[in-house]
Image (cartoon, rainbow, N blue to C red):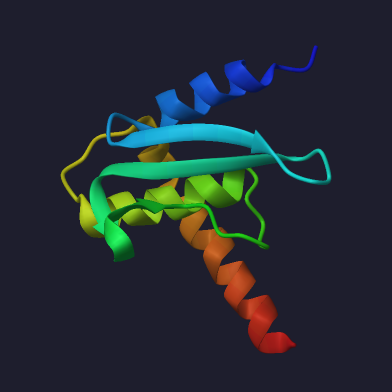
Amino acid sequence: MVASRSARERKAAAQAGDLARVRIEVDDADQFVYKITCTQCKVRDDRPWSAYRPGQDNGFMAAMDRWIFHLVERHPGAEAPCLEFLDAAQQRLQERRDAASAD
């Protein structure tokens, strides 16, 4: 059985921890787009920091990897279940960098 969008959103929010606000939207291609925003950090125009990047991969893993890196860099004392995947996120980042440099 496929999980509903709201069930996926609840699971992602639980993984992301207390500093995150998670929303899942559906894009023009009927794909889920995960948007994770930080409840404490602001960027330009006083907008919350967000893992959403238009036009790029915004699936669960990509958004969660960005969120993990944000937590490690900006909130080093924060606790979140997703932090157990830091090593895997760093490995995926290195693989993307290696692939980009090979092109």
